[in-house]
Image (cartoon, rainbow, N blue to C red; front, side, top):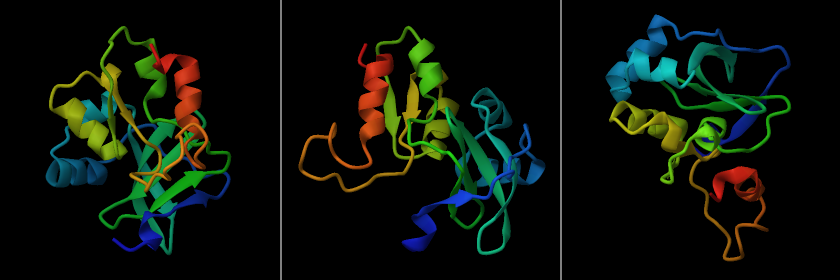
Length: 157
C-alpha cells in the first residue's frame, strides 16, 4: 500500500452510497474478508461508486457525522465533506450495557470481529487506521481528540 492510498481525502458534496450493499461488494467481502451479508447488514455497511483517481467501486461506513468510503479491490479512502473523526460504531457501543469494548484498526477488522461472533455492541474502529502516536498524552495529541470526546460521551463507563 502506498502512502497516498492510505490517506483519507474528501468526497465531493452530494456523493452518497446506496442504502444497501451490491453483489460485487458482497462478493469482495466474502472472498477477501470472509464476511457475510448478515454481518454487513447488521453494521449498516453500504456500497456505491466514488471518484478517486478514477471512478471506483467502494464500500461505505456510516459515522456519526458522515461517511467514509474504501475502494475495492484497490485500497483508497475518502470521506464526505463535514466528516469528523470519531470511532466507527460508537453510537451502538454507547447504547450497550457491555463493560467490554474491542477497539480495532479499521472498519473491516470490526466487521471481522462481528462475523466471528463478537457482539456488534462491543466493537469500535478508529477512523484513520493505526497511526504513530506522539509520546505526549492522547488527550492532547493532534488527531486523537475523538478519543477524549468518546470518553466524555460515556465510553469511559
